Image 1 (cartoon, helix red, strand yellow):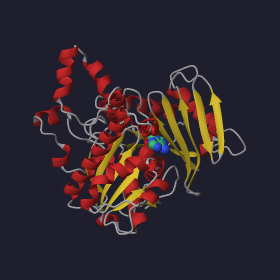
Image 2: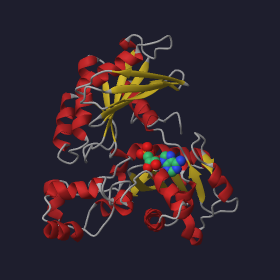
Image 3: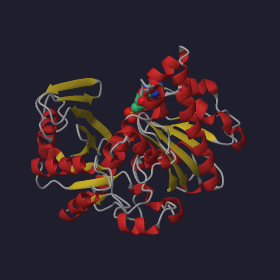
Length: 412
Ligand code: AMP
């Protein structure tokens, strides 16, 4: 029996099949171009790659394609769909209603629909995925694992903005934070790698991918995070601005006669590293161009790393000290340059990097401590594994163990 995880975006469905008995993923894959006639599926089973091409006009067709792929071949991860014990869905926005993962009921679906106003780009495809899985796997329990849940432990002073309090009460304007599943995973793994109880650790976890966020994790609980009401706030990202003076969009909208939708696009899709360089949002391109002497790309790296370093310093202040900085996701796991630059000015906090170890940490699945031997603050590179959290939450909920006092993840 296995758990199917689904992460449904507007035009893609990422999935994995986890077998708890072997503590292993039998397959991981993605359907791309959902909503079009030329959708395709790519799946990895160990070293083997499978590719299927088929029209997928909607999420039902995409999930049907996933189930077909899982039934194919000698090594089919789920030849009979009845082998799927439960489905775990990545759900982006749980608002204040969900501080942890939950079994999907009709009521939960209604709540997600209500929360779509807060995450208009993310919750509707998540809902489409839930409905598709319910239709294609009737009777199989489904669980929602929220990106916001891990950050629900933030104190009021961290999640409120200095805005009219009525906006919070009327519209739910507050910091929610995202990437919670990833911050949860890497913070728990950090305790294992450091060989210390999570309860005594002050961690800054940095999820740096195309989107990027930082979290201050004190004793295993998120006490602050850089993404806010939406995933637009905080660090400099691939195409998102991160934190700016809120007066800027008002000013530019007036000067350039932009609509709300146009400004939204500017801030979410045309800003960040893309906005600065005018060409790139992929860090590999930016690093390569910077190495060739491109000033715009050098500056973009400087802005990105300055935002990271300021955030680490701020979170050390929030937690009254720092035991480790944890890097994860595409950039965090691969870019020695960004890691080194982000930590450059933090010697005063007791952060010292081992440059050789830092250079060697790229692209692997290994968990590494890349701090210099005498560094007071440890620096870890930990590949994230959101699917594992989704699979284990799902299984824990289906088996009635999740949320009970003795519940533990296999990876902690
Ligand atoms: P993610 O959203 O976690 O998939 O991360 C995507 C980002 O990781 C992209 O901006 C990639 O350029 C970046 N990335 C992946 N590999 C590398 C690498 N070797 N060096 C620098 N950045 C990388």
